[in-house]
Image 1 (tube, rainbow, N blue to C red):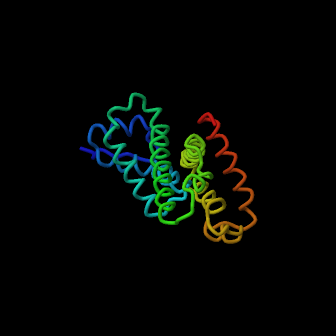
Image 2 (tube, one colour):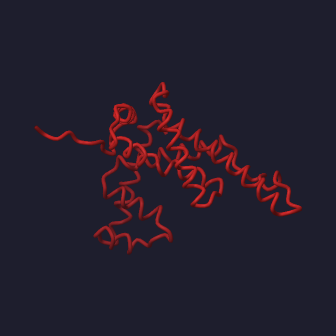
Image 3 (spheres, rainbow, N blue to C red):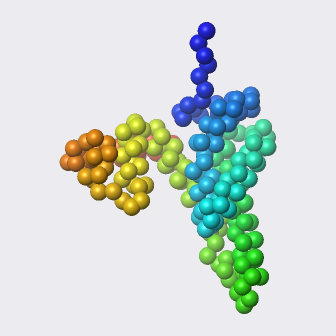
Length: 193
């Protein structure tokens, strides 16, 4: 009898949630893997240290684990994750600023928080970033890697290096990049973006 295959990156949220609720550990790993960048990115927008961002990440994952069965619509999962991560990040930042204000005499903790992103703004940014990650995941592995190398590598890579890493001629990078971006644009349109 063939062994049942675990979740793959193409599974819908509905399918992942159903498998998670059925106790599938691989589905939990896949769900967290799908949304880890989204969750982690939000505390970073609030300038949390990597350690504090990791704590917030763990807290959001625990809340997801605890409340997933109460989710009424799986289409709302991403928004729910963004809301929870944003609120936890916002509250972390406020506590952090108050602590700094107490430690540093003469500093007004409220003034320090004047540049905090509003929870709604941080949530909207995170939603767009996750849509971009989801749309990129629909592309071929070569296009995914090209987009990663061209747009996410720090420091930015020259075409010559991108070509070397992908095993392409340097002159073909621009052409292939254009095709990949058109496919990404089509995927984003298909997602309603």
